[in-house]
Image (cartoon, rainbow, N blue to C red; front, side, top):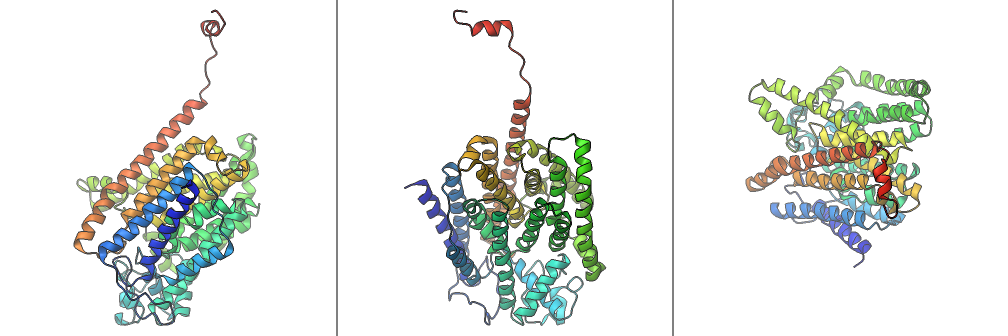
Length: 507
């Protein structure tokens, strides 16, 4: 079997397994959504807990293997419009799974649509806990008001308005928003110069994107669409528009505002002029970017109210089990107050994130022609690898940045295989990120908080051990690649007389 057919077969099998979980009824991966109303109903069967785990885990392993095969022997993936339409339709026939976050999106949207304040009222308190939508919000969000920005929460309100009194209907409208954002990101990446086969391989059908972000119906997909749009505006020399879109992205989810920093770094690093001149040239677009960002952020948050600001600001501070920082926090907690141990862990992780970003910069030297794209890739990768709190769908920004970077290299080389063949360090980094992303996805299988005891024991054990070890291994890969780039840049000493005579015939 040719590598192309093998990769394609693995990919189809992986997506098929994920879709099977999504069209089935309530399970350990898929929370109850009540009467479907006019939304697509589930198929009339229920999957056993361990069967769900096997299906999800197999899908991520097969999807990861498909990309590994493609990485070794690149084969263009050529999707037509009907492939995209068919895949989008299949996604919209499923219910979100691998998480229960979509139930809180629907709950906050319902509260807002009914005139309540989702930044103040928790779903379990709305209408005495008897509302037909909010009572289905799942732990751990039942007693938590919205922690999302105004744009994200208002989109939830629109879904709540359109979906009516059925949780399933509200969730389906939200899914339609997510699918539109997923396809919108695809269109933007292509417009930015990444060839369609690259985009469809590493973004559109990437199981780590499709499973965690799209089939999970996560808000991050919507924030990412605004982030990539801001990048496109910045690269088109429209800094004010880029700032406005950066404000929209950050008002959807605060971490998406990193695109503004990437654009500033790109403007400063652009060209071969002396640094003072580059700083002077970057000053005007930077000021316009900042003005545009503030012109969106400030009025939207004032309109949402101070409760929204306090909820968004106070939502940080977590240390997830799937990161190495959980072990650091646990050790610090033995000798420090809980809050001090948590804060110290977060500050150390922030410093490590900066250090890893600095190490990644020379590793990504192949992208020096596109400094803003390079900066975005470095920043999003450092965040996904080193942040104290990371979940599989937090990697969407990294995968979009990687897709664009790979596509630009392919387009510049006019060949699918050439770029990575000439940049082994970047290829090794991509492989490491792919393997780590697969492990992180597996660490959150099946995804719901309340699980049968045997399933919980296995999945939490994998989350506590395998994912942190995989992350540390990628840190090691980055350090090795950084050291190689440093050693390769050191000037070699001129050959002495003995070395010259050694190369002389008869010497």
